[in-house]
Amino acid sequence: MKSVVTIAIVGLGAQLVDGTLGMAYGVTSTTLLLTAGYSPAIASASVHLAEIGTTLASGVSHWRFGNVNWPVVRRIGIPGAIGAFAGATFLSSLSTESAAPWMAGILLALGVYLLLRFSTKLPVQKHDLPPRKRFLAPLGLFAGFVDATGGGGWGPVATPTLISSGRMTPRKVIGTVDTSEFLVAIAASLGFFIGIGSEDIPWSAVGALLAGGLIAAPIAAYLVRHVPTRLLGASVGGLIVVTNLRTLLNTFEVGNDVRPEIYAVAFTIWALALGLAFQGLRKDRREERAEQERARERELTPVA
Image (cartoon, rainbow, N blue to C red; front, side, top):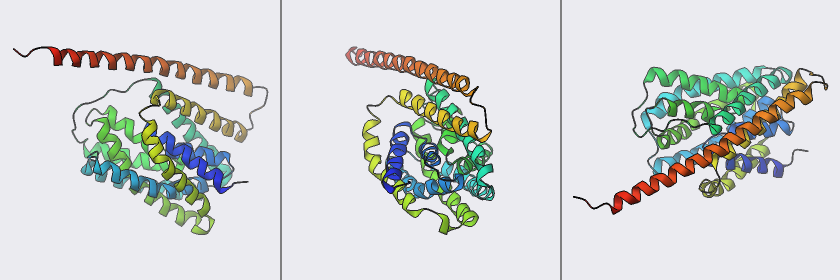
């Protein structure tokens, strides 16, 4: 039975993940809603409706802290909204049987990405140069489509791509991507309204997701300073992979005789990613201590 309390806990858990990683609210909450028995279109619609509130609050917060590049918000957000609207109408047109493997495949790919993202380290830039328009528009269009059809993916697709482009600092990237996601959430919700109608939307679930997310937001702001994001990201990525792998195996009726081997490979990869994440965490802390030592030495060195 899909109780409101259960859905609120889903929203709370997803926001805790998103608040500490800077991404994966949609991926996490959609995966959990699918596990709870919701259809792909209903799960994605519910998540995007709840995200209208969470992304608005997030965008206002980032704006107040000066983390938003407004020209980039416009250049990536508008194409993202177009892609999200198209993705929502596309997913709504699919039958539940057809949509389930599609969404599970996208979520599994995003879970693999989270494993890779948090077991390795992307380059960090220290300058802010807005990316070119011809780069932002296709990125926004693709990320918006993936976000709507997969129930999440705007952050996992857009954030690392912008960071790895080497033209914006991570702080500005995260703030800009979170703010532009408000446009994506609105467009996706409109697409689902047209595709499946408002009468099929479980409004109690939407409210529960939103309430759980709002409760978790200040908790996540505290945890982000204490929970190692590398380990959390790799843990969540592995959970998403295993959960959606099960959906794909059931969809394609994979025999029970080979499932143990498939799961063994998946859990082995998950364990390796966690090991790499732990090693990376130790390396990050050593580099941080070394930088602090160099800073103290510079302070103690007399100026000639």
